[in-house]
Image (cartoon, rainbow, N blue to C red):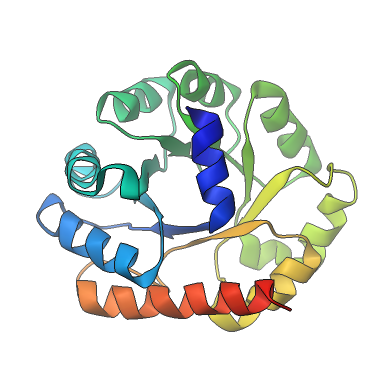
Length: 211
């Protein structure tokens, strides 16, 4: 199951971070982002009723999207995400217990890291994708330095401060993909505007990939 999720992520490795999303708007926003070309949606657990939003997105979008949770900080939370139908667990930190709980529940795991020690701890615990966070602090130079000690096959997403016009620089430093928050969605933003912003990132990714 997780192999399929990772393969689908590889096709368009952009994760929309929907912090502040409410259940009542979840499906409308999700449909707008899918129409823009995004296929991976993250509902942070510090959003209002996040598990209900995940349930609604999974029911409405089915196999058209990968739906998961962010800000997953405990093993119990990882299990709750699985029970709600989530497919991927994303965290801001490296917690071996959370990574193992996600994998045991059949979910893909994307923990946050900032140092090589955290990166290797996460890989050792079974994480399939690493999330450099906060990426705007490390910068492309920081990612490039970490890349020197990670295997070329290791997926590393840059999360925090990424804009469409910075994708080329991040990819040049070794980013495999990106997590994008307020540059696409923030609480109160319309589904239409979120879709327009998502489309700009999809276009930037495709343009970068073609070069």
